[in-house]
Length: 253
Image (cartoon, rainbow, N blue to C red; front, side, top):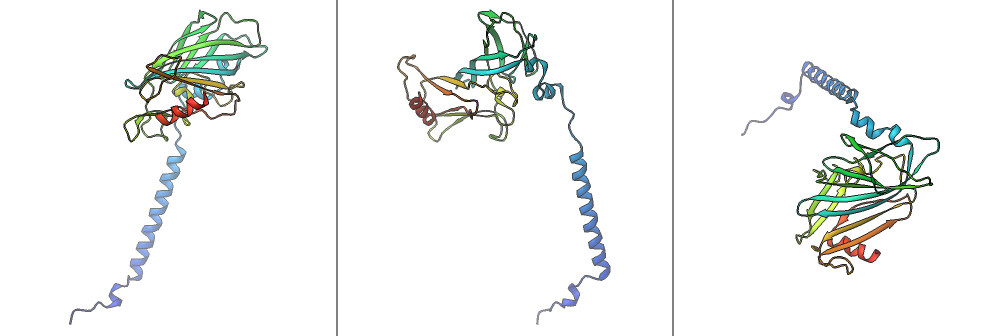
């Protein structure tokens, strides 16, 4: 007959149980201490964090009223050329001339124009400053920000911010952007702050090469143009370029 296992042989001696219990307690205490230590170590905010997250003097004096965005993406090169006409209101009692605009590199602001006057421009990382000269004595003023470049590409959308240059199952362009964490400045110049949104809404115009099987008559025959308007500040803006999305845009227009 095969050797039978005696159940008594499987029992752990009292001393062994004590050792196992002690090891378990030590392990739990060590892991808790490690987690607590990791949670207590906070990264030191950088100057860029402060500029992006604060209501700076260069942000506080002007109130965004409207964004009018026009973008021409180059799908093959994965670049953007665009502009944003910003309607704003100078708040009463303010005399500041420096306006803070936000646009995340490697995108770059090429120029800022106010009623035909090109404004002096400087930058610090993703923060840009335009010296506002030549405003009209009216309630609202308008300036246009011209920009271009290769935007940040999302490495793990939608959890990581950036552009998404993808293709659908038939190999057609499927382009989007993930920006809820980093903000809209990852793909167009704006006041990248939750405290101020455009009170009069915004519009976005897209012009792409004819790669999606559509023509828009009245535009160049090798391009497609579409425009959407948001008439309220309570909106959700999301860039989507694909055959399906452009079909929707064409109906809306």
